[in-house]
Image 1: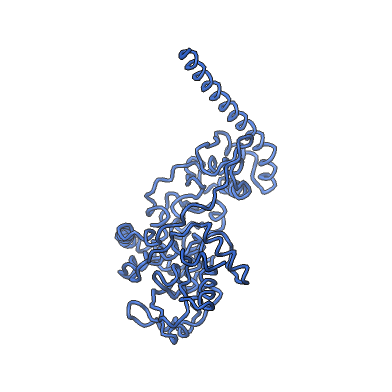
Image 2: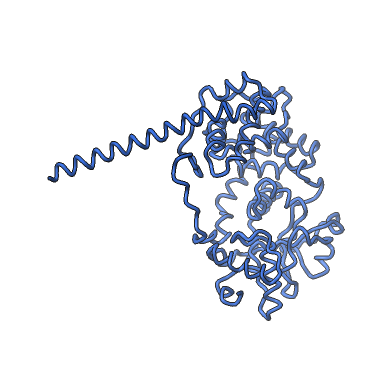
Length: 412
């Protein structure tokens, strides 16, 4: 009897495996039909040649190991409940060991490529230190392994990801890159999300911002350092980088100055912030050329972490990756590379331990009270932070401008 049960179990597993294989084979067939019946008409309409289209997909393969897939005929992926803890303390993002290593390598490579970077600064007005910092953060100065064939990744995600429309647009853009002759398909490598080369550009960004800075007739962000660095600078300029301005300064905000004044829509001259008693934590004065220019308060952890006055260039850095912490990382790394700066002085407090579902509940409560929290998504962006700080002040509480467990019961 035991042998029969074991045999039955083995046969069940074999047949289950065959069924799964057949199901994948069916999806592969649907994919091939989708390429010809659905994608090709759109590609042709956008100007992609039939020869280029055929060549691009001759050896394409669905990559079943990519995240966020929703294959047709398979069970839909379960929605992730907002129960996971939000990021632990933001301090972990600013690993001192990592930053020191990137800064040392960045300074060395800035010296190696000094002539190219000088030309980039003259052409685009973006400091070499900022360009090198992004280069280091995105691809380890071009040394990181970028293993995925871009067409395979984008075709897989355009056909069966949870965000097919986004990746479909990027796939069409990738076909135009191949049509341009800037890169051969075999060399067109990217991340699991399709971000390409040393600057980690998505294909649509490549088409808009990549430049041929070494003058060889091709925009090569995979192998050419000048093209990679020039493309990063061009991206920043096209996104609004202001020549001659810094990204921002770590500051000390006096206790009597409300933390609920942050955000790009509440800009004021830097001299106004200084008049409120806000000073640079380094003890230096704000640069004289910045005093009359618009600047903004930034308190990414409320009163529980480092505090900043930033320029519009900070928000240009966020265009590269829409995260306050990312832009601060780039700014800090650039300061270390360019002027020997060090770690932020203000310590990151015990923040970031709230569940996203709890933060979302607070956001909904603030919205019900008439506050604009931005997107109610369980993440404490600047509109949520300043709304919370204003609500705290109006209710006789100390303004911290950051959600914490003690407020869960009070904010209803």
